[in-house]
Image (cartoon, rainbow, N blue to C red; front, side, top):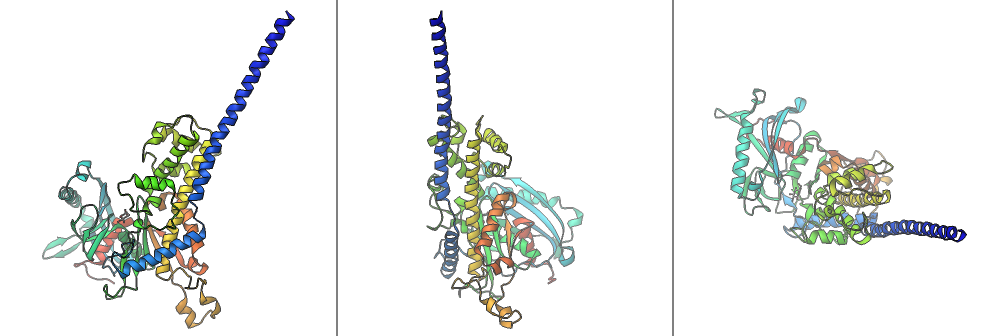
Length: 491
Ligand code: BGC
């Protein structure tokens, strides 16, 4: 009997010891999974790092490439396309103007009634039209026929309150601005050739969406010198006052747009994930900066990092969740929700992982890693965008640093001297549009902080980054107003 009790006790003790060992092993094993994922995270973070000296090199490189592109068409990775636009809106425009804003898979038609300096934008209406998939794959003629029909239907809905346009030979005139999210080689302010998408396709009255953004900003604020789009894709334009000899204008100025998404520099912190994404893209080797900064890619970069962690460190369990293998399944919008999660248990991260990747259960430590990956990808994008903006400011002499890197010679000059007034930096406004800047809060904060880090204190005080209230579509209608052949001039 004693023997039996003893052996039962020994058996129980053995079971308990095995159970405890299993628990310890599981705990250790789990930790080691997360530890491996953490190693990958640190590696990735290190490869994405954007310390100040790297950003400074990038700004300098951007400014140099801008000059090279101006000196010689095709002489730089930046296209530096002249727009032949030297006159920007100033708020005095009056009348009814239409615009067409074409951006890939949909377009926007809008009408805008402008009332001059006091009334400004009296009324505005728009309609967003999705382009049927068949037309996206069809010919440009079919596509533009469709757009024209929808534009006519929209014009037919014009209410009497809008009918204050200009008349010409007894006909009511409706002028139209066209803005397009593709590179255009402009041959005058209202003619151009679409460079990409459909080769050789001719369009009239076309400007790039970035120029529309800048024009829209300038309508409200004369100090706008730069227009930037940080959205699905990215681009920038600015007012150039030192034009090369072969491009001359009456005022000596012209809006140049850059196609900065194509920029590439060995200073850009590129990782194996970026290389992988680029190699598998439809345009390998092209648009290096855009693939690190556009909202189209940020979610995808995060997905790729997580998939690698799942594969190599068993993050999310023993097998890689099927949906995590699906390219472009994680939208940047969902990524930004995870990044904004401030709850102690990261429950929004948990929800997005469930909703998007079908990952049923996650540990807090895993969610923390996911959050960190979002932060790393966004911080890099935002700081690079900042370096590019400062590159433009450097090119136009508004970054506040002189050639020797000294903040400014102003300090030594008396406050009220004439010389000082001449050297004093002017106020510079950057008109900004795009979902990343507008809706991704942390992106915006990181970007602004890096811009101010890069500028001299004096220049930082003179710089304003402003969301261009009405976007590129309204800007295009206002630009049409400012170049109207029929409207009387009120300026
Ligand atoms: C296009 C640019 C456009 C930008 C922002 C880029 O992919 O090449 O022309 O301005 O997207 O929409």
